[in-house]
Each structure stands twice: as structure tokens, then as C-alpha cells.
Length: 258
Image (cartoon, rainbow, N blue to C red; front, side, top):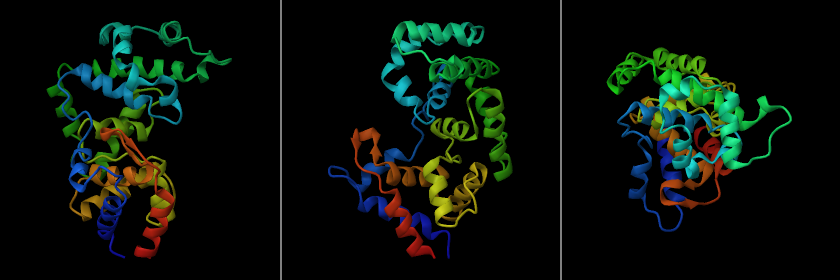
């Protein structure tokens, strides 16, 4: 089996299931990071806290996308120095007062409390850089080979509570670092069920998809997004949501590559 076939098969599959109103040319805008045009440390911070809530059901509770403007105001217009010296309890109380959500019996298991910890750590992490150029130089140090590429999200995951390897990858790829993919449930299922990987280990899945993209001479980000669009059916830039085709796509891929 030629691994380079996977991109061609996936891309054509995506084109074939495009919802009504979308054409192949409309896909190009999905193949670059959503926040690739960042221009300040505050932009980096915002992407970090957005990625931090992209875990399981947290987006449904926090709804950062629709509340972004008000949350920025609550966080003193992303004053990193102010945020960095807060504690999780104070931010949790601030959000509870604003959004009147039902508190958990165990506060530490509450999505808002977990996210508050991530916000504080994100502010501390971004504050380590004097400018966006210094941040970019930091990222470039890891763009050397696959081992170094893998090391960066692992490092970031140790800096920010609630931020595992996959969320760190999400943060990097959506900032426009297109050599990164997010080993989420979709990529894990595809890689494992088609025997591209012998487990659903995040790092194995990450490295497998990066290698597949390299063999096809495309960016890992593009392959990641093609697979995600097939599985989720969420053409979010065009505000179109249809059913996902993950199960059907996996069966199709099995027949084509085995």
C-alpha cells in the first residue's frame, strides 16, 4: 500500500461529499490556520485560551466563540500581567457572576474552573516572550525534524494546566504552523481502524499523519483539515453543518488501501 494514496483518496472523497452551495475552490480557505494572521502577544494568548476550551464538552459550556468580546473585557482587555497574578477561584467567581452557570459539587471538576487555570497559565506562558518575533523564533527552533516537532507541544503541555499534547498541537496549527496536526478522536479512529497505527496513542497518530502528509508533499495541516471536515461535516467558515462521514470514510479507505 502506498501511503501517498491516502491524501488523494481523502481529498476526492471530501470533494464528492461537499454540501450544496460549496464548490472545490471553496475548500482552499480551510487549509491555513484560523489565526495565522496573529500580530500581537494578546492574539497568541487568545488562541491559547480558545484551544484550551476545545476539549470534550467544554466548548458547549464556555462558548468562547460567541462570548469572546465580553470575556476579553472581563480579563481586562487581555492584560497579561493582571491575569497572571489571579487565582483560579477568583476567575471562576468572575465567570459565574457573569454567566450564572450551575456550580459543580466539586469545583475542581467544573469546566469553568479548569479553564480558569488554563487562562492563568497561558498568560504566564505568553509573558515569557518580549515580542511576537521572539515567540516566532522560539517556534522555529523546533521546526527541524519530526522528533523536534513533536517535542514542542509536549513542552507546551507541561506549561499549561489542562493542556495536553493534542490541545497544544491545536494551538500551534491554528496559529498557522502548518506542520502540526491535532491528534483528536477523528485522526485516532482513522489511523487505528485502517491499521496506519497499531494504537490510538496521540504521539503515534501525530507522527503518522505528519509522515503521510510529507509523502504526499502537502502540509500536515491540510491533510488534518481534510480528514476533520469529512468526519465532522462542519464547514464552519461557510456556516454550513452537515452530517459527518467518518464511519463510511473509514470503510471506504479500508477497501482502497488494504
